[in-house]
Length: 313
Figure 1 (cartoon, rainbow, N blue to C red):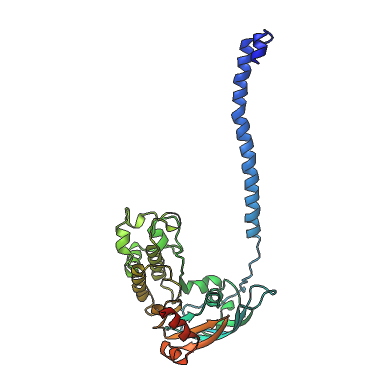
Figure 2: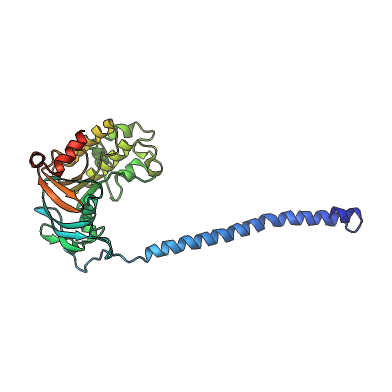
């Protein structure tokens, strides 16, 4: 363009007008290409979302389910077998046990022995392949999922918190909760003191996945949530395994408050958590191999005793 101007083949005004027009076109062109890229990315994401929405729910509900308000007698696993699909072997094999109402039971065993799978089956995250799980004699497949899960409060190894206020994390899943009830639950979970030390108390944002709180603080929030829910059945799945000694002590105190008057299922490795259970079930390779109290199982000189001795070592 400069060459043409110097050779008098192009007027300088025309040349600068062209340059001005050219630079004005660049930004819309970039915006257009970016918009096309975003559309393609959105279509790919929509395809994945639609595939998830179209996924068939394997846990079917019956048209007229029964209603259960509490666990009054027992939870029973009646010759339960489970595998994830027909091509794989059973991961739970012929489990036959009873959990009396109001008792604390522990399920122990090596990793992969089927402990968490039993809890998942009780919650109906999956349905049993063979056998049945019953609440007070009623097959849980005859109970609506909403009713069944309303009977349970779960404190897992990885505390689930969302990027919201502490108050909303404690009341997560509950509607119309009184603030005083939330504070009472936090105090029972030994969480109120550290909450009040936060910048905005119960209105403090916890950050993405609770990054602004320690592991013990997040765990105590989930325990406060369980206390607030006041469900008759409590499930503790490795609730203290990832905590330091000081945090574990506080969480154990909170759990001691939580288990009063409830049916409790404890999945744990630490002896301090399980030795005071009313009944201990020992699993190995998906099978129930020992049942009894701590003292009885120690006298058997079996898998449980090996488990305890290895931990002591």
